[in-house]
Length: 243
Image (cartoon, rainbow, N blue to C red; front, side, top):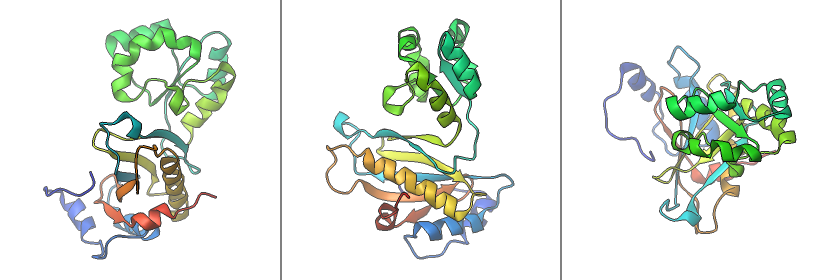
């Protein structure tokens, strides 16, 4: 993902690409302004951050996984499933959970592969019941996990649900040592996108394993859903501050 490969694109993409300047890499602010200027789609495109890291995914002590709260949200509502019981059901529903992971829902996931949600949250006592769902939820990154803040005590259910439906995003390195994170929509102000970007960078740096020596980032790109990618200055990206 670190570089653009040679392939054919549509006319809209090529017209947008022609608007790029020929000076690389870009500062985060310049890249965001260029992306907003290049927009050609008839919908509100997502702005995506793509980082190629110096990590070696073959080593467990170099894997990167974390979460961060985008101060201005993602611009996309998320459907939340809460694996809870008893009073937890009431807490989850009042907080805005879209689905409750009861016995019928667990059966539906296990037997039909149902995954019409973006985030699942569970209390510790429910993990023994949903462990068998790892085959379905695990490969889609939907399995509740204490490391990502999706396994919480019952009294934390309202906070977890509200964060999941707000600006909470997961930061996860793939098998190619890349990290892909949405940081908002093109309709967001440049300032909002910069602040969301800074929050992501901070979370990634905080999650840097000790097994990774030297600079964590090899290359950093910003792109929109339908637009070409823009390479960012790694130095300027890492200099971003979270207020």
